[in-house]
Length: 160
Length: 194
Image (cartoon, rainbow over all chains, first blue to last red; front, side, top):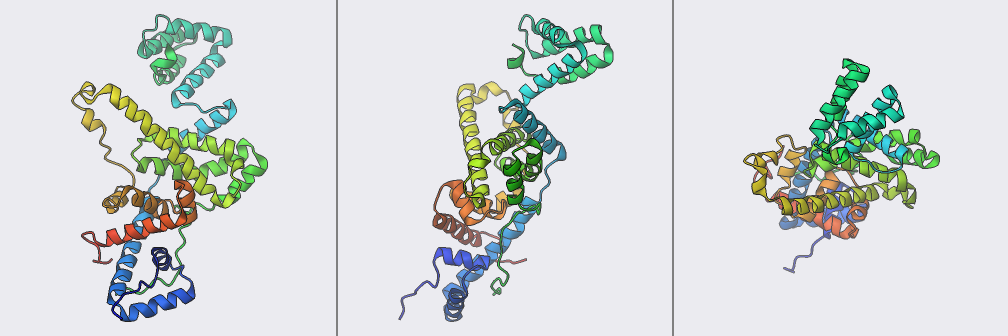
């Protein structure tokens, strides 16, 4: 009787360490471990690893996610739901910029202003500067500063 | 020798933020933006953590989380077995991440590291990568074992949910967890106990 018979499959050992092995199998496994050093050793190793994984896993899962991140995600999701399609952050920035301008200038003027600011296709930095200049003239310094902040997050491909 | 565990361990939600199923049911019944908000609040941190742990920076993790949540909003009703919702959710997340990696690889192939300048290598280093301790702990495991063990012990999924997320049989998931635990036991520092 030298041949060793494993008292549990890999699935059984996993259930054991989770504490979910059915009672009859649990009793058999425990009884086997009483007289089998190899299985006692395996059991100890599995329980040790299990404890480390639980402790480290819980700590990792408890790592906080910033509220600002979560708000940005929710804003984007809500925007996507209302728009009916997935949007990128840059598209959202452009849409936000457009909404601000529409509220200040109306739809027609906004389109003209955006066209003028993007005129020449010289890239996002110049677009932001142009737009800020126009808004400064039309609506004043405070509005221009707001527009500049949003316009600077609009990337090249949306300006073109 | 340690005593066997006496209390059954159920993974549940690791962040203690409650169950998603009732929120999902409420959303599916109403189907509105308002009914989606609580579910979104519950899932967002988990998805953010999932993507951040897999190497995404905050901006990319936010974008992918947003994509996952919009997919949930549009298609959660198609998940016939609600008890497998988390499996489906993580499958969506995993597919999006794989797409992202493929896109990034194509980009890298065409850019070339030399064109990125002297600080390019530093740009890839993220000092505050979430889950670093856990990732260090499982560093010696195979990719399949890492995935199964992380979904189990960090994301808190049931084996059948992990099987659904990875599209593999439950037995394979358990084998990977078993094998991962055995490898962990052979690492330096194992067996010292805490």
